[in-house]
Length: 118
Image 1 (tube, helix red, strand yellow):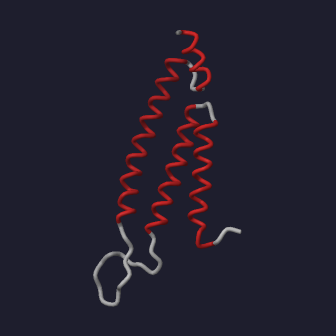
Image 2 (cartoon, helix red, strand yellow):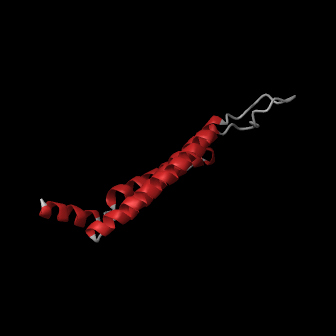
Image 3 (cartoon, helix red, strand yellow):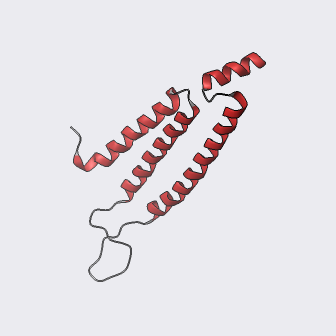
C-alpha cells in the first residue's frame, strides 16, 4: 500500500522508470527524447518535493513565523527547466537533421546503414 505522505516520491520513481524504459527500449529517436523528458520531469518533481516544508512559509521575516521553506530548490528547478527545453529543442533539431540525412529516425536502420557504408 502506498503511503499518502510518500505519494510524491512514488510518483517520481514511477515516472523515472517509465522515462528510462522509454529512452532505452524504443528505437525511434523522437520517442527516446520523449522518454528523456519524462525522466527529467521526474527529477524536477523529486527536487520540488524535497524542498517542501510542512507548515513552512515564504522566507520573509515576520512576527510569529518560525518555519520557512527553502526557495533554493525551486530556483534551481526553474533554471533546469530552461536548460531542459533548450536541450530538447537541440535534440529535436538533430533528429530532423538525422532524418534528412538517413531518411529515417529509427536507430536500428541508422546503425545498419552506417555498418553497410563502412
